[in-house]
Length: 368
Ligand SMILES: [Fe+2]
Image (cartoon, rainbow, N blue to C red; front, side):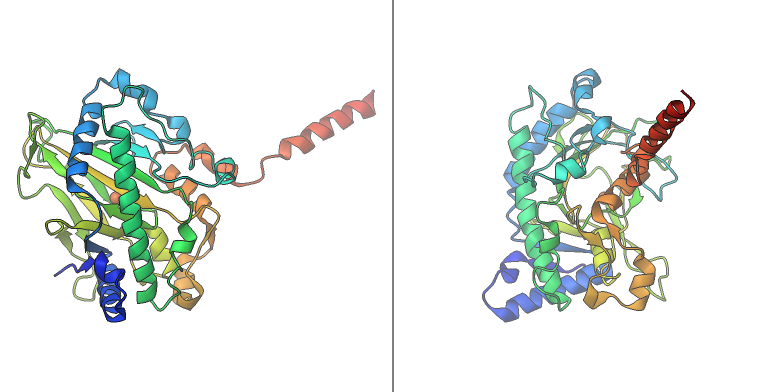
C-alpha cells in the first residue's frame, strides 16, 4: 500500500499537465488513505527543531508555572493544554497522554470573536517564553497554512470543482497551530495498552503535520525507541478489508503529511474520508515525542454540508442536517472534553427569562 506523495512545485506549476498529475495523486491519496505526503512544502526543518527545543523547555517547567496558560474558560483553544484533558470520542473516554500549546498564526475578522469568543481568542504567550517559542510556532503555522491552501486548491481541481471551492470557505477561519509533547510512560505503564493519542479523526478541514521527533529518557532528540511507537492511520474500508487497515504514517524524508479532517469529508460528501489515526506509545519507559500540527478550519459562518456538485442522495443522508461550522466546532469541543457541556446551552434561545420577568412584574402590578 503506497501512500502517494505530491510535490507543491507541481501544483503551482504553469504546466497544466503537472498540475493535473498532482491533483490526480491527491485525489487517490485523500480518497483511499485520507492523507498525502507533501514535498517542497516550505517548512524549514532546522527552524522546526529549534522550535521543538523551545517548546520542550516550556513543557519541562513546573506545573505551577504553566497553569496560568491552561485556560478552561477559553476551552484550551489558546495556550497550554494540561495532560489528561483531551479525550478521543471513540476512545472510551481515555484521556490522551500529552501536553499541548495552541496559537492562531493568522489574523481573523472583527465580528467572528464576538460570535464565537472561545474559538477566536487572542493568542496567549508565556511572559518569559523560551527564545523562539512564539516566533517558531507562528512561523511554522504560516508555512503549513500556505502548503494547505495549495493542497486544498488542487483537491478542488481534482474533484472538478472551482479551484477556490475549499479555500474560499476557510478565509479568516479559526485556524490553529498546536505543539504537542507526548509524555513519558514509567516502567509500570509501558505495554499496558496506554496510548499517547487514542484513535480519532480530526474535526477540522485539513491537518498539516510537519513531522515530529522522539526524546530519549535524558530528554535528548533521538531516533525512535522501538518499532511500535508513532503515528498509525486506518485506511478506507473495502469489501476485502471491512475494517480498513492500520498502516504506519511515517513520511518519506523531507516530506510533511496532510490529513483529511471531518469538515473536508462532509463538504465532499464522503469522497474524501477523515483519516482515523492513533499515536502509539513506546514499549520502553522514559521516552517522549514532540510533534506539531496546523489545523485548517472552515470559517465559523460557513455551512457544513456536501457541496452542491457532490450532494447525492446518499451524501445528504450521511451528512444531514446542514450545520453551521461554528456550531459544529462547539459540539465537537464538548465531545472531546475541551469545552464544558453547558456550551451547548448557548445554541438555543437564551432569553426566556425576559418574558418570565415581565410576567412576574405584571402579576405584581395586577395584585397591587
Ligand atoms: Fe489528530
